[in-house]
Length: 95
Image 1 (cartoon, rainbow, N blue to C red):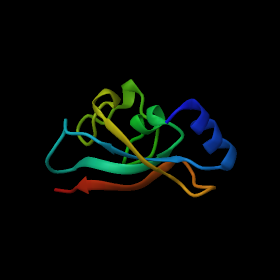
Image 2 (image 1 turned 30 degrees about the vertical axis):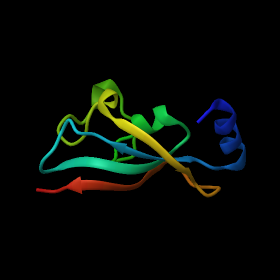
Image 3 (image 1 turned 30 degrees about the horizontal axis):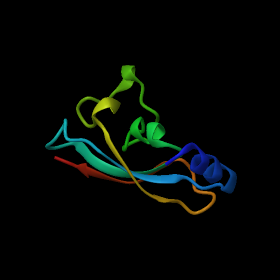
C-alpha cells in the first residue's frame, strides 16, 4: 500500500486488513496468526493478537507471540468505513 492509498483510507474512515503470523513460538498456549485492522503494516506488525495492544521491545510476550521483527504481515483487504483498529480474530492454541 502506498502513502496515497493510506491517506485515502484515513479520509474515508477505512483501515487495512492484515494477516499477521509467526513461527518462532509453536505448541501449546501460543498464537500462530491473526487478522487485524490497522492503518499500516508497521501498526499491524506491532499488534499483539491476544490484547490488540501495541507491543514495545520491553513488553514482548516471548512465550505466546513473537517479537515484531519475527512477525510476517500480509495485506489482504480494506475494512468497511468506521471499523476500529484492533484484532478481528486470532488463532490461539490452548494447552
